[in-house]
Amino acid sequence: MDNQRGKTAKPQATQKHPDQWQQDLNPGHLAGQNIGPPADEVGSSRMTAFHLRKRGRAVGGLDDEELKQVPLVPEGSWLQQGATYVNLAGDSWHEFTATAEITASSEDAYAPKDRVPYQIWNRLIGEPKPGQK
Image 1 (cartoon, rainbow, N blue to C red):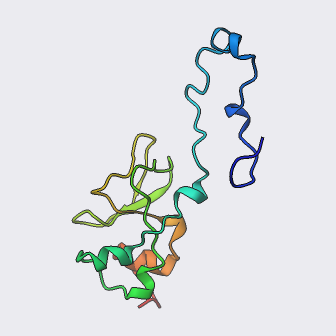
Image 2 (cartoon, rainbow, N blue to C red):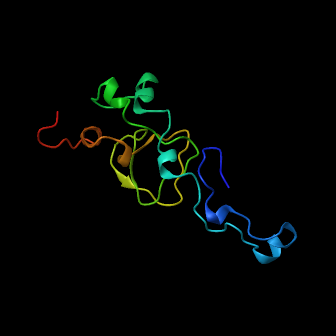
C-alpha cells in the first residue's frame, strides 16, 4: 500500500481482517500506536523564527538569515517524545525535553533542537560556546 508520498503504509495501519470481523477480532485497532507522520515531516514546517520577528516578537540577537534556519513545529502537531525543544513564545528561553502529551498550540513557537544548526541553537538559548559570536 502506497500513500500519497510514495512511501509504504506502516504495518500497524493496515487492516488484516475482513470488514465484517474486524471489530470482533481487533476491537482496539491502533490503540496505543504512535504511527503519526515521521519526525522529519513534523519538524519541517514552513514557519520559522523569522516569521516571529516579522510579527513583532523579539527573538534575540540573531539576524534574519539565521532566524530562517530555525523551523517551528506546526500548530496542532505533537512534539516528539524525548526530543529537545525551546518555546520561543515564552518569556525565558530554555531547552526542555518533550513528553508524549505535548502538542503545539497557536500560542506556542516550539523550535526542535535537531533541526537547528548548533551554533544558532547555542546563541538562541543564550549559551554561546567559545569561538561563537
